[in-house]
Each structure stands twice: as structure tokens, then as C-alpha cells.
Image (cartoon, rainbow, N blue to C red):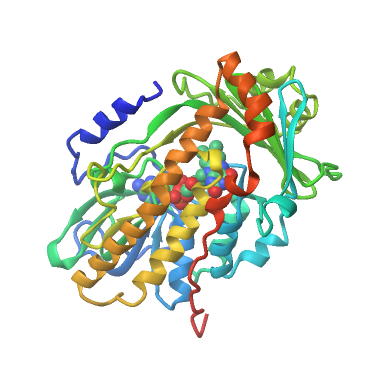
Amino acid sequence: MATSFSSRLLHLLRPSPFSASLRPTRIRPERRIFTSFAGPSENPRKEEIVVVGAGIAGLATALALHRVGVRSVVLEQGDSLRTGGTSLTLSKNGWRALDVLGVGDELRSKFLQIQRLVIRSEDGRELRSFSFKEEAPGQELRGVERRVLLETLASRLPPNTISFSSRLKSIERQGSEGTLLELDDGRRVLAEIVIACDGVHSPVAKWMGFSEPNYVGHCVFLGLGLYPDGQLFKPEVNYFYGRGMRAGFAPVSSTKVYWFITFNSPSPGPRTSDPYVLKKEALDLVRSWPQELPDVVQRTPEDGVVKTSLADRWLWPGFSPPSWANGVVVIGDAWHPMTPNLGQGACLALEDAVVLVSKLRGVIGGRRELIDQVLREYSKERWARVFPLTIRANLVGSLSQWENPVFCSFRNNIMIPKLVRLGRLVEHTNFECESLEPAGSA
Ligand SMILES: Cc1cc2nc3c(=O)[nH]c(=O)nc-3n(C[C@H](O)[C@H](O)[C@H](O)COP(=O)(O)OP(=O)(O)OC[C@H]3O[C@@H](n4cnc5c(N)ncnc54)[C@H](O)[C@@H]3O)c2cc1C
């Protein structure tokens, strides 16, 4: 069920499950690149830095480390990079981080820059349109295919950095020795520093005492409409607001158009894996909406429709555990899962990675106390950035998902046309990451 403000508090007060054992949820076929971790009967292999998870945060962290000349090993439970997940919108702050990582221009060349934002009601009436150039100069918004983003980050890593089919099963402190990580198949590694980028249901965050993220009361369908002969849409994000439901689409490249439909639901509902059913459910929601929207959905390959429930975690000061402890730190969704209403989760994960490495680079290989001091500073600095945005994304979602006809009428006839200022709306994207010196030999 969707969680109220008070149940969020109760959630935080639950005792920490500080268990060293993490339950496996899926087993992948064997296809390891990195095979030299020690087995159960041998001494564990020692590594300076282990990153858990080859998602956006994990790959960005490994690349940032590589750019400052530091080697890391990335443990990924999947047998390859994630190829699903359709597309993400990255704002100026995400692009700044990608520039620091040295992949900004490569990605820019593949994806269209969005020039306008057009908001309509479900009957197609235009409520407002904004020009980024005029109202938020300097903003850079592009839809980016998740697969391409991950592949681009991974392509810049030295060979064998990512160890696929390496699912973290348990984690245990070994005093001054470091942190012992055990994988599903019994391989073990002893790490001086563990950077946990293991996503929204992070086992490491759970081990550190964080609660599971809270379902916020809405689910989303998303996909990429394919136009092999070229799409003819303007470079605009099109939003449609209904009652308890909103949808949108935006061209990503010359042949692909990203779409989403967010709808209220008292619970996440059963997992539907039948792709035909998923596409039909998505189409049924918007059949009577402006025709261009169901047309884009219709263009999506049958197995390309994704449905997911939305959740976040509010990092209450004093209640939420610290994001670091004894050389272990959680970043990205593992630490601050948030709803996608501001399109910021991946942008912040990229920022997290760059900021962490720019702080850590001076102490890697140094004393544990120094490393922990840097992790504490990092956590404090980033908390001030990510916590307000988590709350704001949640509030924007609630307002966008209003069902009450009076509230919806206020939103569509007064708030959006008269009160919203685009510049204010995207102010949070004004964030510059410190530059990382490229490694001399990279
Ligand atoms: C519907 C939706 C739309 C979104 N749209 C946007 C958007 O437009 N813009 C934006 O900036 N953000 C968006 N986001 C948010 C964005 O997707 C996330 O913030 C981002 O993916 C976080 O990256 P991450 O690396 O922290 O986690 P993930 O990308 O989830 O990566 C975690 C990785 O860890 C691995 N892993 C997990 N457990 C283990 C284990 N035990 N052992 C080894 N590996 C493990 C996983 O396999 C995965 O590869 C959206 C999110 C959703 C749900």
C-alpha cells in the first residue's frame, strides 16, 4: 500500500536488520570475466576498491576512479549489462557529470536535445508551453537510452574491470583488515573500500540498517516507440495531465520516441510478465487521450513495454543510518531511491560518483580513519543535496497524480498556466561537479 507520512517514520524506527547474510533472489548463468576471486577454502583475494553493481552509479564510479588512475573491481549480479529500462531524461547536472567522466560528447552525438516543454490536459487542450532557451537558458535536456549510457560508460573501463554473474550474497566486517564480500557461488574478496551501487533494493543498504523503500502509490508503464523510417516529432517533451494519471512522450533520437504513463494504484499489484498484456494495459489507459500518445505506445515492440512501481526513501536526519561505515559507502539509488518526477535519480547517481571520487582520490591507500573521515564529509555534503530533492520529487508526483476534480481543475487552469516558472522548476539542475584529471596513460 502507499505509505503515509507517519508510517514512513515508523519504518525508520524499526530495528536494524544488521545481518551478515543476504538472501539470494536470482541465479544467473555462469559467464564471468573476472574469475580470480578466492574460493571458500582459500584466503580471500584482496582488493583496494570493490564497487557493487554495474548500473549507472557503479560504472560512473569505476570510470571516475579510472580517470584518476585508480583501479577498481565492479561486481555485477547480471550476466551482462542491463539492456532493458528503455530511456532516461538527463538534465544539465547529469551532462556536467558525464563531461567530467569524458563521455558527454559521445552521448550527445547520439541523442536529441529537447527545446520545449508542452503541457496539455488529457483532452489535448494546451495548458502551457515553455522554451528552455528563453526561460531556462543553459539547460540541457536529452532522452538517453539506458543501454547506450551503460555501454558507453563500460566501454571506457580497462578490460576485466566488471565481473559479471557475481552476485553479492553476504558482507562482513573484518576489523582493520577490511570488509569481506562473499558471492553466491562462494567466491570471496576482502576489500579495503566498498562502494555499494546496488540499486533501489540494495542488499548493502539493508545490511547497513536502511529500510526498504516505500511505495508511493503510483506505477508507471514506459517504453520506446520505434520509427525505422524516421520520426517527425519536434524536439519537445509532451506532457498530458489527467485525473490520477499523467503521460508523456519525447523524441530521443531520429528513430526512437520515449513514452511513459503514470497511474495511481493502491498497491503495486501482481507482477505481469506477459508482454502482450503489459502493452494492452498501457494502451487501454490512454486510448481516449490525444491520438499521438497511443500511436507512440503502439509503435513499441511487444516485449519493450516495462511496468514498474515507484518508491522512495526519505533520509530523515537522526533516524536514517549513516550512508558510510568502516570503509563501506552506499551511493545512487542504493542510498537515496527517489521517484522519477524530477528526472533526477540517474543525474544524482552520476553526481554522487564524481563527487565521491574527487574526495576519495587523496586518501586511497591511506589510513582507515582518513578514509572514513572523507566518507563522512561526503555523506554530509551529498545528504544536503539529495534529501530535499527526494521530498520534492515525491510532492511533485502527488500533485501530478491528483484525482480530485476540483484540485485537477485548479492545477490545469491556474497553477500550470499562471503560477509555474520553468527557471524555478529546474533550478536544482544548477550543479557543477569538480573536474577529475584524466589518468596519464588512460
Ligand atoms: C520509471 C523510472 C523512470 C526514471 N526516469 C529517470 C529520468 O528520466 N532521469 C533520471 O535522472 N533518473 C530517472 N530514473 C531514476 C534512475 O533510473 C535511477 O536513479 C538510476 O538507475 C540509479 O542508478 P544506480 O546505479 O544507483 O542503480 P541501478 O541502475 O538500479 O543499478 C544497480 C545495479 O546493481 C546490481 N545489483 C543489485 N544487487 C546486486 C548484488 N547483490 N550483487 C551484485 N550486483 C547487484 C543490479 O543488477 C544493477 O546493475 C527513473 C527511474 C524509474 C523507475
